[in-house]
Each structure stands twice: as C-alpha cells, then as structure tokens.
Length: 141
Length: 130
Length: 104
Image (cartoon, rainbow over all chains, first blue to last red; front, side, top):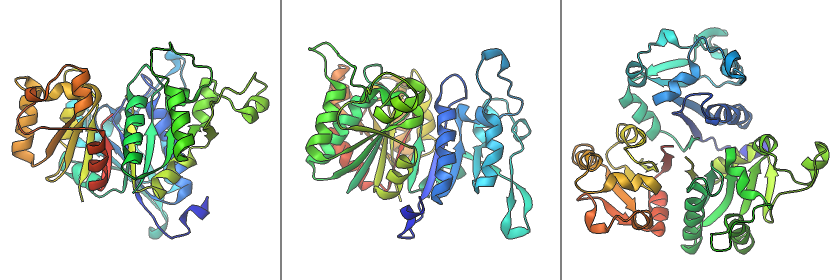
C-alpha cells in the first residue's frame, strides 16, 4: 500500500459523519473506511455534526437490539494515528448534550514523550466550516 | 480532469446510482476521465448480474457495464459490503462455499483501499447516496 | 479554496440543506439534485431560506434542471437567483471548485 504514496503526496481527507449509529449502517461502514485509510498515511480528520455526534456518545448498549456495539472501535483510532476528531458544539447543544456525554477518546503523542492527549476537539460551527475549506477530499456516507 | 465517483446506494430504491451514471456520462462527454466508480454499502447491488428489471425500465446494471466497456471505467464493488450482502465473484464464491458468481460484466470486487486510492489519485471525488 | 456542496434531499424531509447552508463560505456553490430541488421552488418556506442564504452568505445556488423537470418544477418557478443547470453544468461546478462535499 505504501506504493500509493510514491510521489510523496499526502492529501487531507475529511470523513463527514452526520448520521446516528444502528438505525442505518452508514456509521459502522464509515468507521471501517477510516480504519483502512490509516494504512495510506494520509492526513485524516473526522467531523461529527448533526446526529453524527451520537456515534461517539458514552454508554452505548446494543444487547437489546441484537446488533454489535461498535463504539469501542473508536478507542483504537489513536493507535492508528487518527487523532483529529472534530465535534460541533452547536450539534451537541441542539441535542441537549455536552462534551462530558462523549467517550473520552485519547491518543499518545509520540512527539511529546507519548503523553496521553484527547482526540476529541469540540469546535464551533464556524470553525467546522473553516475545517471543511481546508480539505482535499471530503467523504460522506 | 480525473473524476472518482462513490455510489452508496443500490439501484431502483434510490436515485443515487442514476445520478452518478448521468454525472459520469456528462463528465466523459466533456472529455474528462472517470478513473473509477466505487460502490459501497447497498451500492454493491448495482453490480449484480441477477437483476432482470422490466424491459420498459432503465437497465441500471447494464448501463454501468456498457459505460465501463466503452470508456474503460473501473467499476469496483467493496468486498466487505459484498460479503454482507451476498455478492460473489468466482474467488469469493469458492472461498465461502457459496453457489455462483453473480458479478456483472465490467464490475470487479476489491477492498476499501481502492476507495482511498481513488481519493488520492483523482482530482475530484463525487459522492452519491441517500 | 471553494467547495461545491450537493444536497439531494428536500428541506421538508431532512435538515441536510439547513446544515449545509450553515457550513458554507463566500464563493462556495450549493447544487440541489434529486429531491433537493423541491427546496428551490419560489413562494416556499425553504425557498425563502435559500434567498436569505444567497443574500447573507455569498454562496451561489444551483438546481439540476433534469431533476426539476422530473418533479414538475418549471424554471420560471425557481427562487430568484437560483440557476438551473444540466449534468454538464454539474461536472463544470465539480471541476471549478476545489472539493465536492455531499450532504447525505
């Protein structure tokens, strides 16, 4: 897969998540793409807006619906150097949520003596719009 | 310019595949290149050879197959999505002990890496879905 | 840097258009396709929001003519300022902007 980057080109990929998990398959299959993307050494960011914020909410329990709870997989993203998870404050506010309702996702910063740092960055809608402008490829599912 | 296209929905239920096809046709007519169409989620059903729609309806799978043949467009069905949804080429059918190949002409099954590669190698990636 | 945003759902069904308009920057283009064109009809509540967005945020708004025709929306019933385009125009917009963002 490293051959893909022979030209040394790194693109900025944004994964736009606007849908809640379980009701449809998009959230799960989006996460599967993100995990694959890690192998391509691109600059990856994840955006959670609208109902997408529910993908990383704490305390998901799917035993009653017969589906696999895939939220623990988000904990693994840090190990794949995917540590820019942008969550929109307005989307949280609208849904009666705060950052404390989200999973405490972290990564170890190799440039800072492997200090544990939060992967989640709560941003305003305006900041989210600016982030979008900064991308080469925007993937939505 | 090189266009990559992502189709997230199956045929007939949603307009996504029809819109993607019209977009691809228009891009090719304008002299652009469509390097790859990647089918994900239920989008993999666009590649089934077992579809026999009424003759007075558009033939979604056949349209894609013809486009691939005419313009050398790479039509890729995501393997993980295919495995969940019962789409098999010869290799997959043998591996999983299932019946027959049901992948239509011009389509091939491959990994999600092909989607990322399309994002890297194309100038624009255009997504159609629900 | 500019983005072509595509919206394929009616504003009466989902919040995709509203969310999209909240994330545009001046110079961006918004293209309504499929059921998204329903939002572009003049004299509608969604149409008023489109007009306001054009005036306040500096975005250009387009609607795919083939999808309008399929849904019985004539070009003279479009909100003032919204431009009807064909698939070739869609391709041009995708090429002219730096990225395409689908509001699915």
